[in-house]
Length: 456
Figure 1 (cartoon, rainbow, N blue to C red):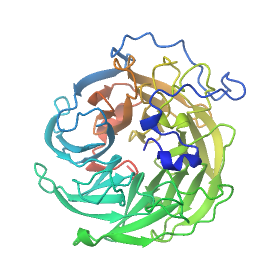
Figure 2 (figure 1 turned 90 degrees about the vertical axis):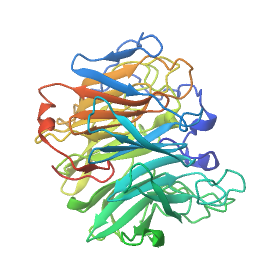
Figure 3 (figure 1 turned 45 degrees about the vertical axis):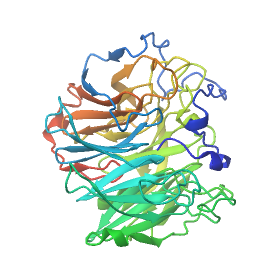
Figure 4 (figure 1 turned 120 degrees about the horizontal axis):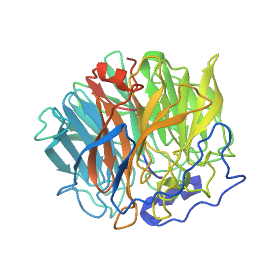
């Protein structure tokens, strides 16, 4: 969930693999913070790799990357949870951790299955990976040469020590991310991917905002694309596709971040989503990256991945409304923009930093979220007051000693702890102890896939 492919650069998204040392974006307009923004402090002076936290946040433990998933481009990506297990995607495959003792996570198994970018979700005994760059075939031993396949891979993880490859589904333009939508005993998967690319074998025009795959739970090998709904859009020209979609099946809603715009969808019929509203913010948002509902689905927090995740956008030269979060209230069924949030700590010019993946903390009556910011670290923000979101805690490291792309890709709350997938450093476990967040410790989750929200 970090960047679009080089061959789809026309969408305006930066590609980390070739822009690993991108310069800061040029500021547009007044860089001073608006009333709803967060003023930035001076640049962090932390030594390379040094851990800094707010007083209410504890860095519990770090589990470094290990072979076979510790090569130069084996970056950690997204996370999913089920019972006492954590699943972590990686450009080289995926890992399963036993987190029954959160202070001492243990690697149960690691599967070598290279692909960009292997974002992960888990449902019952099935694990699904998103593949967003063409490869020679669907199997794990495929290569980047003679590339003619991309899409979803499916594994059986009933035996956590020995996951088994089940099959795959080819999707047009691959799968940058995906979103599970369980409904009436069926599992639908919304596939997000940018496109089209006329010269590509796997990404021909036309290309819709999303594709829908049905995965039969009793026969996952027969999974297939069952719909590519035509959702009316305005102002995107030939460039379509979504970066990230968050579904809230209980509320029959989905919020889609689709590069140039944000969308609110009615998913009462999961195979035929209907457009409720399209919103645009050309002044502040470059890449609509992801979306998070609050618990009662009266708000949506959208993120902007300015620079595609490769640039140091958390600096005084970049306005606080760019590379940030925007909070929208849902009023009479429609989105209304209220405020912006960006971490208040200015990062050094060697540190890629921008808003990225996060999740709600289950706190009744409050809208509090934890969020990854790459080398900006992990931030806890309270957006209960939509017009004035504020940070209430943080964790970060000093610049990655070897320079280049690093930091927290995903940071999610699960049963009392926050788990952060650091691109280079491995798995971090954090704890926040604060009167505002302590009620979350009373909520027990049985599983958690961040793009499929559930009420608490």
